[in-house]
Amino acid sequence: MIRYLALLITLLSIVPAESADWPHWRGANRNDVTSESSGWDGKSWLKEELWRVSVGEGSSSPLVISNRVYLAGWSNNRDTIICLDAESGKEKWRQTYDSPRYGRFSIGDKGLYSGACSTPEYDSETGMLFTLGVDGDLHAWDTRDKGRRVWSLNLYEQYKAQRRPEVAVRKKTRRDYGYMSSPVVIGNQLIVEVGGKSGNLVAFNKRTGRELWKSENRDEAGHTGGPVPIVIQGVPCVAVLTLRNLVVTRIDGPNSGQTVAIYPWTTDFANNIATPAVSGDSVIITSAYNHFSMCRLKVTLNGATKVWENKLASGVCSPLIHSGHVYWAWRRVHCIDFKTGKELWSGGKVGSQGSCILTGDNRLIVYANKGDLSLVETAKRSPKKYTQLATESILSKTDAWPHVILANGRLICRDRSGNVRCISVSRNMTSKTN
Image 1 (tube, one colour):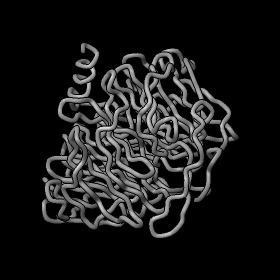
Image 2: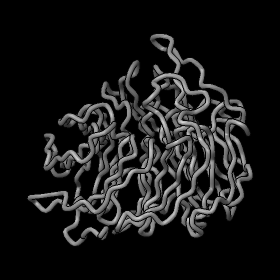
Image 3: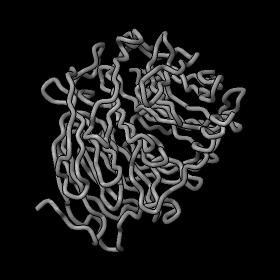
Image 4: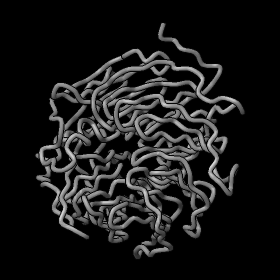
């Protein structure tokens, strides 16, 4: 009971910080919302480039913790985990290991999903950084000891996961991009979407790598950013969009692994990509192709029911929920009403890849196309129309699939080729690379 209460308190006590690090996929609260200011001063936005580096291929996103930037990339048949000084961009340490460019069962869209695709996960209690390679290599690194490897295992070898099966809705299609999702630390558990007969989710002891439990659901893994914490009627759970369903799983003691809710959601080309967005007991899921829709579900311990489903979609960008609105950037920047699903406005041209975050001064930072950064007013500031304040192209090599992040006044952007730029949004911050 004590452990259960501690876990519940952990999930319920996520609150914004005044000046936040970015320690997880989608930020400190795993929702793409930060209390930090966008830096807009009424006339200008991006202030100065602080540094730039190249880290190798992949759509893995950066993390920032205690003035350190952590990145994962691939080159020359090796995955590399890099730690940089956030102020100067200078390397503090790196660790590498052998890894193929693609997962061992990769099929379809070759060239688009190469290298390190999963965003690392950080645990503040132990100082460990957890990474998952496209070929199933799960590692725990000690950031307080120059990235020393604490434990590791391979998901394909340990759990015998197979190639994702053909999923056919309108036509027969098959895609397998390897392991894409981020591990999630909750309490003592490191929860990973493994997929297949061993269980869609497997939880490990974060300190040792010892298996703790497996989920009773055995769906193949999807291609999203990974499990998302959610509390249902006081019960700690995680929600994950698998290859075929939205699945909500209990993570509380002896009940861990039990399925709370399951909602069918299969997309052509196995393209369940956007991470579910959580608000209270609601989960929003979306995909393109045969669905081309967005759906809000209400989850209880007895299952999931649909609240609404509209004809808007995101193929890649994960939706974010804030103050009664839902935002995302896919082809255009969209804003809809969270309660009804009705569109309030849309605008801009952002292509089929990108991400957005919502800042403490009620603005959206949108990163899309091949490295375009835009600043857009939220519905609180512009309730009836799309209003863009600024835009600038900062990278131009390859797709902007890695997530833009904002931490301590610094925007960090990366493209799929591994080019990384750090830009100040504060006039009080200057380059320290010289």
